[in-house]
Image (cartoon, rainbow over all chains, first blue to last red; front, side, top):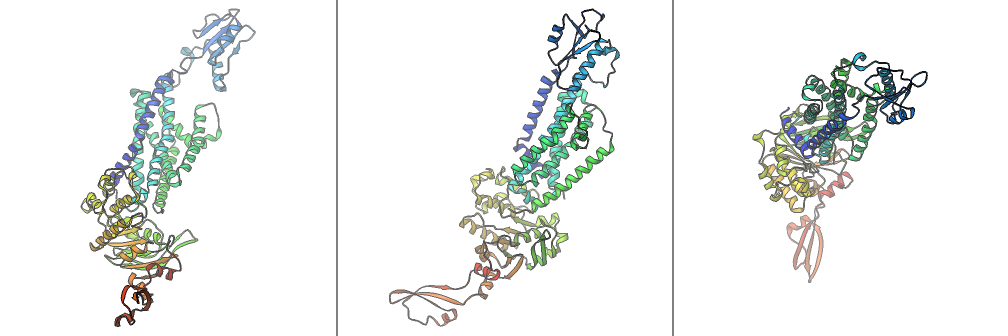
Length: 331
Length: 282
């Protein structure tokens, strides 16, 4: 029954090579890693600078985080960026002066940090440290999780769909309907190739950007989540490519997927945008699960895995049905 | 080889494509299934090859009821040529054939090079990608693909479409050779020349029903006017006269200096199709 599976695998790998899929994946891996290692880890690494205008010299024994200025004018000048906090204690009560970063949450935390430094709640003594990662490691895990999610959800989807689309245009899908090989093997071979390719990509991306030693404990959880996301997106790509009649419609669908499906997840996950309805967005849970995996937080919900397995089974069944329909088409 | 009784099929509730077809195809027979586009011939072929499910009526293939026949073993015994040459355009003829052949037991597979040579495929193109081939060359590779597993039952859908006249003659010769080897051929076409020259029997299908089924010769004979047109010379001039065929038995009963030609007035298969179905084939 599955005798031809190896030949299908070989053919699909050949199509992926011909379609420069591996080259693109390598290029993505290089770009992501360069960005993370050369740019992202250097962003936003320092603590907010705190400037104090204290003409009466009321605050003695200041924190090492505080820089004193001599006038209100100077305070306003040094706080003209969106990463500094100014404190003016010339009046009855301390006044926080800061240039908004346009994100209410960030401004709020900057203000809190300024007050904390002024009142002597220094990080080393008072702050509860959550998690075992330093700031750089946190940044690395965060951005690596996001790039992996993007790669698997958008690029992976497109990769499999483009191969199926090619086969559909050549008409060879119909030939497979009369070959001595099970129809399901036609889908499974593609899924296997993309799954393995995505898992290798996930391992390399994690090793290069989180570090081999640091990723040792989290890698199994990352591979589980990457596997789920890879299968969901590959099956969705397969369905769309077989179901949609031409590449124009497919491009439009891809745009819709990118704009309306993936973008809200990124906005809700990465910015101060707060949407209550995002919990009903299936991709949000996949995104959260990938991110949790990178921070070593277990996705303990049995329901999550149940829904994932159910969705994969349903998508596979739909793909099988639509493949059978495509094989019976004419011309 | 094939036994079909009361075959029905519907695309949805409204669109009945087949209305109770009955026919049999014997071992080693070339059976022509003739009909215009949308008549139900491709639907019938798809049901027989197991691509379409959900038909009504009884079908037996290789002596087995169809419900149990569409196993991997069945697909090893059949060859299917589609109307269009479906091939991997990024691969060469040889690589395409090697790929498709890999699904069959190695002892059953024919030599791809030999097959292509038999199909008079240009050697220069053997290793070039299919995307650089003409339609005729693609059709040759497709035919090779259909024959690569030495099928016992061959389904051919418009085999000579896209071929020049010499290519069509070659394909007919190859189909004849297959028959001589004992292969049963189910030929779906609206090319009357192919059907007339190749088929042992033909079925005319129109609007999902078989309008007539017999040998091409008998179909034409049954509807022949039994007349011949004789062109001859008389007093140095060319004259044509239509006479009953039986009159020829006693020789030409009129004065003539020489016979130029004698044409029978037998109808063509296409005339017969129009007569039985009330519609043309295009």
